[in-house]
Amino acid sequence: KIGYHQTNYSLDTWKNPNGATTQGASPSRGVPITSVDSGMFMERDTQWFGRSLIQTLEPRLYYVYIPNEDQDDIPLFDTGLPDFNFATIFTEFRYAGGDRIGDANQLTGMVSSRFIDPDSGAELIRVGLGQRVYFGDYEVKLSPSENTSRTDLLAAFSGQVLPRVFFDSSWQYSQDLSRTERFNAGMRYQPEIGKVLNGNNSECWRGSGECIRRA
Image (tube, rainbow, N blue to C red; front, side, top):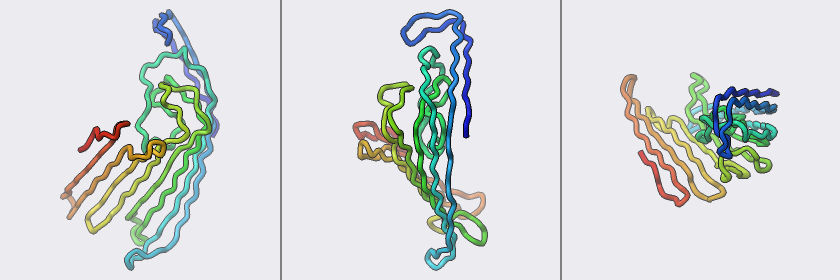
């Protein structure tokens, strides 16, 4: 994929990062974007406690390159760092909002596996493991602490663990700090259609290791 991202502003009055007030500014920014998304899908017949299933193995690699573009003359209206999870790991942009387009030279890798009922096609179990690595520090950033060589490691497990019992969990682990950053787990019991019992637990930690949220 090859693209070009162009942004133009028309501002009446704004303050630049140095605190100076500018009248009638019209900053603009143009950034080329190149990405390569590749993956494989493999499957095999297997047995699970005497039950015939199909197991898949699905590796994926996603490379993104965005050159550095000076954006100091563009104000920050609503740009920030999004939550890092499996929904955002395969994205081109590091930021949510259009005021900053982060330079990128990064590779995201993920491998997932599923167990599928061959008769109904229903997915019974899914596991996944993924991480993004950066080839050098990037220049566009909202804070100096953003520079890193890799993201946290993400892992997830979901599926039907018992008849009518479903389990979902995700785990975020920092290899740089050698600790768990976030853990989520939930269980659902559904004896029949229209009846369900849910239970959830969510934990995350600060730099000191203190638990700051649990529900």
